[in-house]
Amino acid sequence: MDRKSQLTEPRRAHSMIAQYLCRLTNNRGLFISLIAAVLLLAIPAFAQTVAPPMPDNASAKSYGDGWECNIGFRLDENACVAVIVPQNAYDTNRSYGSGWECLHGFRRTDETECVAVDVPEGGYLDPSGERWRCLRGYIEVDDTCQEIVLPANAYLADATYASYGSSWTCERGFEATGDLCTAIAVPANAYLNGPGYGQPWTCERGFFEQAGLCEAVAIPANAYFDDATYGTGWKCDRGYAASAETCEFINVPENAHLDRSGNRWECDRNFQKSKGLCVLNN
Image (cartoon, rainbow, N blue to C red; front, side, top):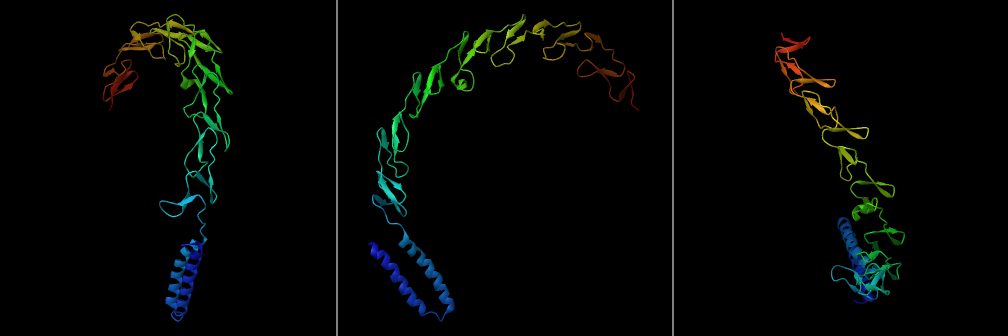
Protein backbone atom coordinates (compact mmCIF):
# COMPACT_ATOMS: atom_id res chain seq x y z
CA MET A 1 0.00 0.00 0.00
CA ASP A 2 1.44 3.37 -1.05
CA ARG A 3 1.46 6.57 1.04
CA LYS A 4 -1.68 7.98 -0.68
CA SER A 5 -3.67 4.83 0.02
CA GLN A 6 -2.60 4.92 3.69
CA LEU A 7 -4.15 8.38 4.09
CA THR A 8 -7.31 7.71 1.98
CA GLU A 9 -8.47 4.43 3.57
CA PRO A 10 -8.96 5.81 7.16
CA ARG A 11 -10.94 8.80 5.78
CA ARG A 12 -13.27 6.53 3.78
CA ALA A 13 -13.88 4.39 6.85
CA HIS A 14 -14.67 7.45 9.01
CA SER A 15 -17.23 8.66 6.37
CA MET A 16 -19.06 5.34 6.34
CA ILE A 17 -19.18 5.23 10.15
CA ALA A 18 -20.59 8.78 10.32
CA GLN A 19 -23.44 7.92 7.87
CA TYR A 20 -24.34 4.87 9.91
CA LEU A 21 -24.42 6.85 13.17
CA CYS A 22 -26.92 9.33 11.76
CA ARG A 23 -29.44 6.52 11.36
CA LEU A 24 -29.12 5.58 15.03
CA THR A 25 -29.60 8.96 16.68
CA ASN A 26 -33.06 7.98 17.97
CA ASN A 27 -31.54 5.23 20.10
CA ARG A 28 -29.41 7.21 22.58
CA GLY A 29 -27.95 4.24 24.54
CA LEU A 30 -26.89 2.39 21.43
CA PHE A 31 -25.57 5.63 19.98
CA ILE A 32 -23.29 6.30 22.98
CA SER A 33 -21.95 2.72 22.92
CA LEU A 34 -21.16 2.98 19.25
CA ILE A 35 -19.40 6.33 19.78
CA ALA A 36 -17.06 4.68 22.32
CA ALA A 37 -16.37 1.79 19.97
CA VAL A 38 -15.63 4.16 17.10
CA LEU A 39 -13.14 6.12 19.21
CA LEU A 40 -11.27 2.94 20.15
CA LEU A 41 -11.09 1.94 16.49
CA ALA A 42 -10.14 5.40 15.33
CA ILE A 43 -7.16 5.87 17.68
CA PRO A 44 -4.95 3.18 16.01
CA ALA A 45 -5.96 4.47 12.59
CA PHE A 46 -5.03 8.02 13.58
CA ALA A 47 -1.77 6.85 15.11
CA GLN A 48 -0.95 5.05 11.88
CA THR A 49 -1.39 8.23 9.87
CA VAL A 50 0.98 10.27 12.08
CA ALA A 51 3.71 7.61 12.61
CA PRO A 52 7.06 8.77 11.17
CA PRO A 53 7.94 7.09 7.87
CA MET A 54 10.77 4.59 7.59
CA PRO A 55 13.93 6.52 6.68
CA ASP A 56 16.46 5.55 4.05
CA ASN A 57 19.00 2.85 4.99
CA ALA A 58 16.52 1.16 7.36
CA SER A 59 14.51 -2.08 7.37
CA ALA A 60 11.44 -3.38 9.18
CA LYS A 61 12.29 -5.20 12.40
CA SER A 62 12.36 -8.99 12.15
CA TYR A 63 10.06 -9.11 15.18
CA GLY A 64 7.53 -6.61 16.53
CA ASP A 65 6.61 -3.31 14.90
CA GLY A 66 8.80 -0.49 13.71
CA TRP A 67 12.10 -0.37 11.89
CA GLU A 68 15.84 -0.38 12.58
CA CYS A 69 18.90 0.94 10.81
CA ASN A 70 20.79 -1.33 8.44
CA ILE A 71 24.26 -2.61 9.29
CA GLY A 72 26.78 0.14 8.64
CA PHE A 73 24.32 2.82 9.72
CA ARG A 74 23.33 4.16 13.14
CA LEU A 75 20.27 6.00 14.46
CA ASP A 76 20.57 9.79 14.70
CA GLU A 77 17.19 11.25 15.75
CA ASN A 78 14.80 9.84 13.08
CA ALA A 79 17.43 9.19 10.41
CA CYS A 80 19.94 6.43 9.71
CA VAL A 81 23.35 7.96 9.06
CA ALA A 82 26.39 6.12 7.77
CA VAL A 83 28.95 4.93 10.34
CA ILE A 84 32.32 6.52 9.63
CA VAL A 85 34.99 4.24 11.12
CA PRO A 86 38.18 6.19 11.88
CA GLN A 87 41.70 4.83 11.51
CA ASN A 88 42.75 2.24 14.14
CA ALA A 89 39.10 1.34 14.85
CA TYR A 90 36.62 -1.36 13.82
CA ASP A 91 32.90 -1.43 12.97
CA THR A 92 30.75 -2.85 15.82
CA ASN A 93 27.82 -3.62 13.48
CA ARG A 94 25.48 -2.02 16.02
CA SER A 95 22.86 0.60 15.16
CA TYR A 96 23.28 2.38 18.50
CA GLY A 97 26.19 4.30 19.99
CA SER A 98 28.99 5.50 17.75
CA GLY A 99 28.97 2.29 15.71
CA TRP A 100 32.72 1.73 16.15
CA GLU A 101 35.35 0.96 18.80
CA CYS A 102 39.10 1.53 18.99
CA LEU A 103 41.47 -1.38 18.33
CA HIS A 104 43.45 -2.93 21.21
CA GLY A 105 46.27 -0.57 22.12
CA PHE A 106 44.36 2.53 21.07
CA ARG A 107 42.02 4.81 23.00
CA ARG A 108 39.24 7.18 21.99
CA THR A 109 40.01 10.88 22.31
CA ASP A 110 36.73 12.21 20.86
CA GLU A 111 33.99 10.98 18.53
CA THR A 112 36.24 10.86 15.49
CA GLU A 113 39.70 9.60 16.48
CA CYS A 114 41.60 6.66 18.06
CA VAL A 115 45.15 7.39 19.24
CA ALA A 116 47.81 4.90 20.34
CA VAL A 117 48.26 4.31 24.08
CA ASP A 118 51.69 5.71 24.90
CA VAL A 119 53.26 3.22 27.36
CA PRO A 120 56.14 4.81 29.31
CA GLU A 121 59.40 3.04 30.10
CA GLY A 122 58.91 0.67 33.01
CA GLY A 123 55.23 0.16 32.16
CA TYR A 124 53.04 -2.27 30.22
CA LEU A 125 49.76 -2.16 28.33
CA ASP A 126 46.76 -2.99 30.52
CA PRO A 127 44.68 -6.02 29.35
CA SER A 128 41.85 -3.62 28.54
CA GLY A 129 44.08 -2.22 25.78
CA GLU A 130 43.03 1.33 26.69
CA ARG A 131 45.50 2.25 29.46
CA TRP A 132 48.89 1.32 30.94
CA ARG A 133 50.25 0.25 34.32
CA CYS A 134 53.71 0.22 35.91
CA LEU A 135 55.79 -2.94 36.20
CA ARG A 136 56.77 -4.35 39.60
CA GLY A 137 59.62 -2.25 40.97
CA TYR A 138 58.20 0.93 39.46
CA ILE A 139 55.67 3.46 40.72
CA GLU A 140 53.38 5.74 38.70
CA VAL A 141 54.28 9.42 38.89
CA ASP A 142 52.20 11.65 36.60
CA ASP A 143 52.56 10.07 33.13
CA THR A 144 55.74 8.11 33.89
CA CYS A 145 56.87 4.97 35.74
CA GLN A 146 59.73 5.75 38.11
CA GLU A 147 61.94 3.01 39.52
CA ILE A 148 61.52 2.39 43.24
CA VAL A 149 64.74 3.03 45.17
CA LEU A 150 65.00 0.51 48.00
CA PRO A 151 66.83 1.48 51.20
CA ALA A 152 69.28 -0.98 52.75
CA ASN A 153 67.62 -3.96 54.51
CA ALA A 154 64.34 -3.58 52.61
CA TYR A 155 62.42 -5.46 49.90
CA LEU A 156 59.57 -4.62 47.51
CA ALA A 157 56.10 -4.75 49.05
CA ASP A 158 53.36 -6.92 47.61
CA ALA A 159 51.71 -5.14 44.67
CA THR A 160 48.27 -5.54 46.31
CA TYR A 161 49.31 -3.46 49.32
CA ALA A 162 51.83 -1.15 47.65
CA SER A 163 49.06 1.05 46.22
CA TYR A 164 47.76 1.70 49.76
CA GLY A 165 51.03 2.41 51.56
CA SER A 166 54.78 2.18 51.17
CA SER A 167 56.17 0.44 48.10
CA TRP A 168 58.78 -1.36 50.22
CA THR A 169 58.96 -3.22 53.54
CA CYS A 170 61.83 -3.55 56.00
CA GLU A 171 63.40 -6.98 56.49
CA ARG A 172 62.92 -8.88 59.73
CA GLY A 173 64.88 -7.23 62.53
CA PHE A 174 64.50 -3.76 61.01
CA GLU A 175 61.80 -1.09 61.18
CA ALA A 176 60.96 1.87 58.95
CA THR A 177 62.30 5.19 60.17
CA GLY A 178 61.46 7.78 57.54
CA ASP A 179 63.05 6.56 54.30
CA LEU A 180 65.41 4.14 56.04
CA CYS A 181 65.27 0.72 57.69
CA THR A 182 66.93 0.84 61.10
CA ALA A 183 67.84 -2.14 63.28
CA ILE A 184 65.38 -2.96 66.08
CA ALA A 185 67.03 -2.89 69.50
CA VAL A 186 65.85 -6.10 71.14
CA PRO A 187 66.61 -6.22 74.89
CA ALA A 188 68.04 -9.27 76.63
CA ASN A 189 65.54 -12.05 77.32
CA ALA A 190 63.25 -10.92 74.46
CA TYR A 191 62.49 -12.08 70.90
CA LEU A 192 61.35 -10.39 67.66
CA ASN A 193 57.68 -10.36 66.73
CA GLY A 194 56.26 -10.89 63.27
CA PRO A 195 55.49 -7.92 60.98
CA GLY A 196 52.32 -5.99 61.77
CA TYR A 197 52.24 -7.33 65.32
CA GLY A 198 52.54 -3.94 66.98
CA GLN A 199 55.46 -3.82 69.36
CA PRO A 200 58.49 -5.25 67.55
CA TRP A 201 59.58 -7.54 70.41
CA THR A 202 58.17 -9.54 73.33
CA CYS A 203 59.78 -10.67 76.57
CA GLU A 204 60.60 -14.35 76.94
CA ARG A 205 58.55 -16.53 79.28
CA GLY A 206 59.46 -15.77 82.87
CA PHE A 207 60.21 -12.12 82.12
CA PHE A 208 58.05 -8.97 82.17
CA GLU A 209 58.62 -5.69 80.34
CA GLN A 210 59.66 -2.84 82.59
CA ALA A 211 60.92 0.48 81.21
CA GLY A 212 61.93 -1.05 77.86
CA LEU A 213 63.72 -4.02 79.44
CA CYS A 214 62.73 -7.59 80.21
CA GLU A 215 63.03 -8.18 83.97
CA ALA A 216 62.78 -11.64 85.51
CA VAL A 217 59.57 -12.37 87.41
CA ALA A 218 60.33 -12.98 91.10
CA ILE A 219 58.10 -15.92 92.08
CA PRO A 220 57.59 -16.27 95.86
CA ALA A 221 57.33 -19.58 97.70
CA ASN A 222 54.09 -21.53 97.18
CA ALA A 223 53.43 -19.79 93.85
CA TYR A 224 53.83 -20.48 90.15
CA PHE A 225 54.51 -18.39 87.02
CA ASP A 226 51.48 -16.78 85.31
CA ASP A 227 52.07 -15.69 81.70
CA ALA A 228 49.09 -13.32 81.58
CA THR A 229 49.97 -9.91 80.16
CA TYR A 230 48.62 -8.19 83.29
CA GLY A 231 49.10 -8.71 87.04
CA THR A 232 52.21 -9.64 89.03
CA GLY A 233 53.34 -12.46 86.78
CA TRP A 234 52.64 -15.18 89.35
CA LYS A 235 49.76 -16.82 91.21
CA CYS A 236 49.58 -18.56 94.56
CA ASP A 237 49.17 -22.32 94.77
CA ARG A 238 45.85 -23.73 95.89
CA GLY A 239 45.38 -23.22 99.63
CA TYR A 240 47.45 -20.02 99.65
CA ALA A 241 46.42 -16.36 99.24
CA ALA A 242 48.48 -13.48 97.89
CA SER A 243 49.64 -10.96 100.48
CA ALA A 244 51.90 -8.21 99.13
CA GLU A 245 54.68 -10.19 97.40
CA THR A 246 54.21 -13.48 99.26
CA CYS A 247 51.71 -16.33 99.41
CA GLU A 248 50.32 -17.05 102.89
CA PHE A 249 48.66 -20.28 103.98
CA ILE A 250 44.83 -20.06 104.24
CA ASN A 251 43.39 -21.18 107.55
CA VAL A 252 40.01 -22.59 106.63
CA PRO A 253 37.59 -22.28 109.57
CA GLU A 254 35.21 -25.02 110.66
CA ASN A 255 32.18 -25.55 108.39
CA ALA A 256 34.01 -23.90 105.47
CA HIS A 257 35.92 -24.99 102.36
CA LEU A 258 38.16 -23.54 99.64
CA ASP A 259 36.26 -21.93 96.75
CA ARG A 260 36.74 -22.73 93.08
CA SER A 261 39.83 -20.51 92.73
CA GLY A 262 41.56 -22.29 95.59
CA ASN A 263 42.82 -18.98 96.95
CA ARG A 264 39.83 -18.10 99.18
CA TRP A 265 37.38 -19.91 101.41
CA GLU A 266 33.61 -19.88 101.71
CA CYS A 267 31.08 -21.29 104.16
CA ASP A 268 29.43 -24.66 103.67
CA ARG A 269 25.80 -24.86 102.69
CA ASN A 270 23.40 -23.59 105.40
CA PHE A 271 26.22 -21.62 107.05
CA GLN A 272 27.04 -17.94 106.69
CA LYS A 273 30.20 -15.88 107.32
CA SER A 274 30.29 -13.90 110.55
CA LYS A 275 33.44 -12.34 112.06
CA GLY A 276 35.76 -14.72 110.22
CA LEU A 277 33.73 -17.81 111.17
CA CYS A 278 30.94 -19.83 109.62
CA VAL A 279 27.82 -19.89 111.80
CA LEU A 280 24.65 -21.85 111.32
CA ASN A 281 22.06 -19.97 109.26
CA ASN A 282 18.91 -20.13 111.45
